[in-house]
Image (cartoon, rainbow, N blue to C red; front, side, top):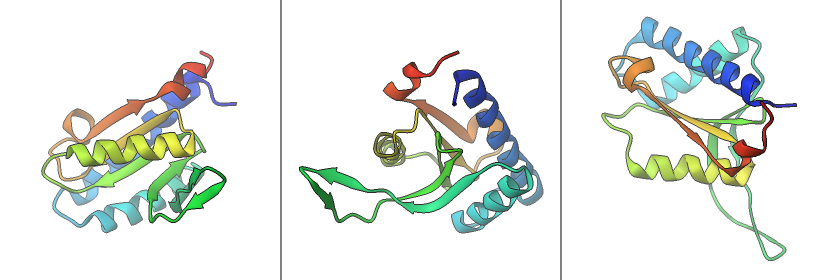
Length: 136
């Protein structure tokens, strides 16, 4: 069962993985490179994840044909979107909130590898209504 405490620890470990990658490679590479490195680093840390999963949208008994793909769904409770851009655009925030809602994930994380410091300015955390139902 996911608790607020276990989710905090998981988020801390995922950010730690991103910091490890950023220390080794620095900023300036393509998003796809960081995505592959994150998959490898998460595997090394025995963190379960799904990648590039099609995110279904259901509406009035049909599945809407969409091309929504979540970068990473970690431990079935944390959505991670990987970016490599100068700034995190509002559309990226809307994107992660959409994935969180559709996947019923209580927390999301945007990691921007095109930053000087992942911990200070390279990540942003989001929570939604599912978070409040987690126990401490």
